[in-house]
Image (cartoon, rainbow over all chains, first blue to last red; front, top):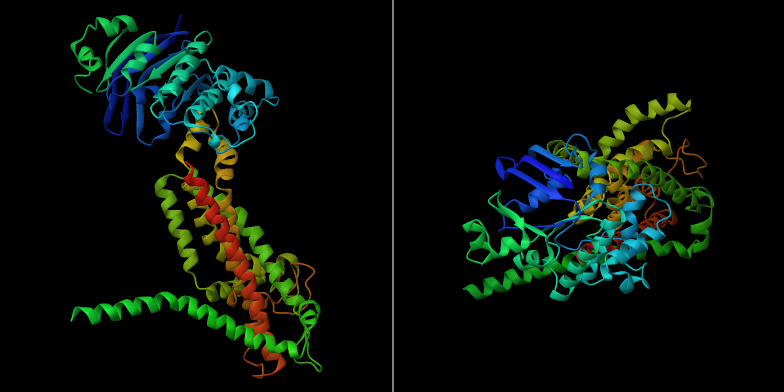
Length: 246
Length: 293
């Protein structure tokens, strides 16, 4: 089943065209890895999927993005869209609240009163419950970087999204924390569609079902991860994954 | 040739550096010496708690309760008006206004700070006082309320710019993280932005109070100057500062009256010292909180 369908999407920052004529389908429950050098448009694309790119003045888009057949720019309220399509940022950035309140923040926004159960469920799903269950009411900044990032995943899960976007989620983390996050992603596969933008080619190879390669705002190649990494169809993909540029 | 020049410059710079401390100490010592002379004549208790300020009756009474209450009324009123307005203005400027309009507003607020207090006092007498007089059917519009309103204008620039600084220095991630969870801009402002800037907001309130409580000229002109215990904002009051300004010229040097004005100066000094200390504390805490991220 197709979860997200992207048709002829262009993304501009003022006059700079960051993503060019992108056509792409994302299946429900898959993990789609997106790789590419910096300025390849992968983060711009990701942030467009829940319209966070609109926070930057001068951003403009044309084309369509359909979430379950509904156009996200016209048919869905952007606050509701962001509830359905959650994002985990590059740096673990908790809000200046306690661990509990960080996770409860989203559900409370959307009018949920009894949040205890949701918080526990989200923390368990993000594989951090055992590490924080005895200190839920301490400040979130007291956690380590890797724990903060899993807390941010829990925060995203707590609003019960359908799609989770990851914007280089492990760029600031050590290998063990990275591994824990990749494990958490595998656990989440049953219930969520996940899109992972990463600068770490190996991480895409490990964690994703399909991989897309972006270069200078264009989608060069997309395919099952096993194929893309062993028999890439495009010379530029091969050069990038073997580390010859980028 | 170079050496003596260096030496002189170095000493000059050093002297300028310590001069500020030296002057503060000298002023404080002078204030203490003159002010404390009062207490040979009158007890500290009667100065602080006597409800009558009759400095030239016989025998004179130097009770600052009405003056303290006058200052308190005017300050409280000004803060109650200026803080909500200042907070709202700062939020609008930093979160909602388009950039070009925010710049115009900021310039406007800086201009407000540039208006001399005597001009504000003058405008208060000519426009605000008659207005209050008609609206509330008062014998005179020169009241605590008039002072509060004019002083709120004077405190606004300080309050707005400090709160705006505190909001702008919030990490961008707070806002983005909140919006990414589906919060509206307003939900983000009141659930994340304001709590995260709370130390800065407290500092702004403190500095606003400091600005108001030390202000003299405008309150002297528009509060009506009656040294009686106020029971309502619609009565004339007399503040600590206005008392010194109004009576210094007629007090006989070396008399109890003269010393009592210095004693009022000591009280003002202590009040502003405490307020500035608190403001510093909050500003410091606000910066320390931000550094974590």
